[in-house]
Image (cartoon, rainbow, N blue to C red; front, side, top):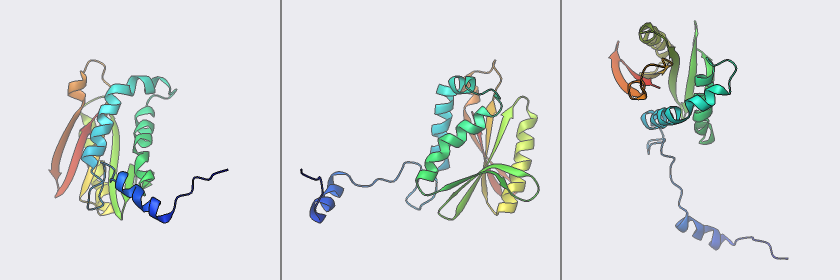
Length: 169
């Protein structure tokens, strides 16, 4: 019986044909490219949200759980995702941790325009406590009458010297 063991020379030669490539959501500086990562999620959500939401008895939880599952790939690359991450008073929905950096993400479901103001205030408090200069506010627009082209957007704002990225889904 023959075993498929490689010699050291054969193993080194494999790298020539299959070099390691960084995942597209990681930069050369070992930071997460949140624009790419959440942009991929926006497309995934647009294409699949109706299917996934039907599987959940409590439909309000579907967007949160699906985003967490989508972001699980960060864990596979050596990161960590904290859910309901404690940050003093109140809790942030998600905090991605990778290579010593934190990426706070607040999730909201839109039923009216107040969600933007509430989400910004909440995220700013978390960013202050976590000593982060950037944060992401992901808004799931559940209004049936609004077309997808209006629901999917990316807007960056400077608020109190901090950068907030508002990600529409």
